[in-house]
Image (cartoon, rainbow, N blue to C red):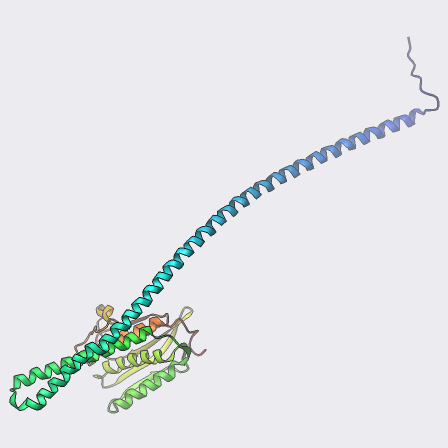
Length: 321
C-alpha cells in the first residue's frame, strides 16, 4: 500500500527545504555562540580565580609588610631610646672631661710649677752651699717638672681639639703648607731644606684644625730630617678610586714598620728624647683631627730612608674644586 504526503495547498517544497536549512544553520550558530560564551565564561572564571589568588597573596604580603613596618618602628623606637641614653652618657662624659681638664689645668699644674719655681729658687739662694750632686738632683727635678708641664699642656690642647665644633669652609691646603714651611725656615734659618708643594690643592674642612694637623706633620718631617745634609719635604696628593689621598713625605731618619702601631698613640716615641725633642702627642693630635673630618691616616717608612704620612678627608670633593 502506498503512502502519500499531502502538503497544505500553496506551500512550495523548495521553499520549505530552504527554511529548514536556515533553521539548522541558525541552530548551529546558536550552538557555536553558546560554546564560545561558555569558553569565555570559563576563561573569565579562571582569570577571576587567579585575580582572587593574587589578591590573597597581596593581602598576605601587605600583612607581612605591616608586621615588618611595626617591627621596624619598634626597633626605631628602641634605637631612639638607646641614642638618647648614649647622648646623655656623652654629655655626662663631656662634663666630666671638662671638670677633669679644669682640675688638670689648676690643681695639677700648680704643684708642678711650684716644683719648678722652688727648685730654681733653691739653686739661686743656696746654690753655693750645695755640692755637685745636689745641683744635679735639683736640675733633674726641674727638668722633669718642666717635661710634665709640657705634657699636660699638650694633653689639654689635644682634648680641646677633640671636642671643639667643626667650622667647615673651603681651605687652600697648598697655601697652608707654604705658610707652615715659611715659619719653619724662619725659626731655623741656618737649615737648608727643599720643599716640594703641590699647587691648587683645596678641601672643605675646618681651617684651624687642618692648619694644626699640617703644622704637626711638617714639624715632624722637619725634625726628623735634621740630620740630613740635603733634606727634602714634599706635600702632594693622588687619586685612589673616587677619593683623594694627601701625603707629607720626607727623607729623614724614618723608622721600622714593625713599630708603626705606636705612631699615633699619645707619648709614644720611636726615637730617644735626647736624639729628637718633643712631648710625643703631635701625631696623636693629627690623627684626632683627621678622624674629626671623617678621614683616616697611616704611614709608610723604612729605617734611615724617610717616612710618608698619608691621610684622607671625607668632607671634601677633591683638590682644585
